[in-house]
Length: 297
Image 1 (cartoon, rainbow, N blue to C red):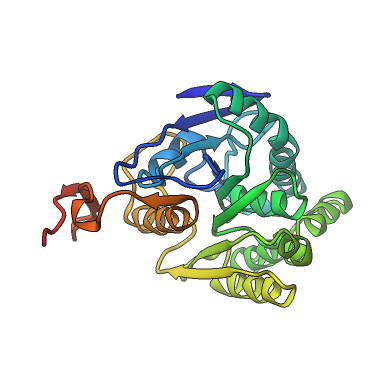
Image 2: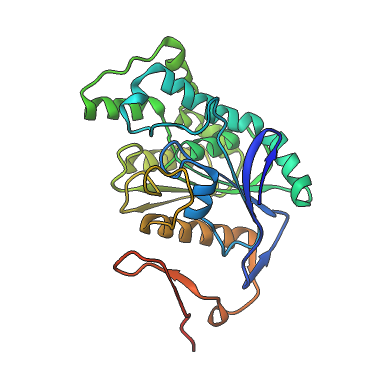
């Protein structure tokens, strides 16, 4: 289901789990894509469908002035002032639009009031963490994938790889300071929301050390439940260009499984025993997706 909620385009997927039902007040998982593949709501919905989560999953487009972001955060364009401003406008704009978009989504989907679950990838993960820091909407739980914790550090790593120096204006630098999520650790922790941080061991945009440092900062700030998981993957969760829905790559299948488990444990209750579970997705050695029958007995 596609629509526009208070100016934000979205792709909504209804509850599809056959072995669980929603428990508690959370009936909606909201997700944002990134500046790297998957770059669109539809592409993220294919990469991380979370079909085992018995709630609506709604994938929101990041607000951009002229459509989808043309380059990833690992490209040399991020060293230009305009790219940083573009990134900041998308992340902050997503959070600014969130309350109105959520209200419109509840009307579109016929959902009652209540807290939501948040997730996102890369820039979208930064938006989810910023929404927590600003207490933009009531949130029951969150899980973020490769969040851009500190734009300044991402730019320094890119400078080292490319041999170029950034050309950020004073305003772009101030925006990067404002979007340093490590500096917002106390604000995020104060929400008391169970949070999962997912990173890639080969990620050059958000190195695994960034995930570890953020987890430790949140723990020092008093966050009650912060967990981290690292996979042997780079930054992207889809093949280039990552704007159209395509069959998920191996890394996306792994991440989707962890997201599904995280949200099922916190917003759902299992209604069938494990032996009666529906066919599960598996990725064989050749990387092709197949349906496999569950083991019995």
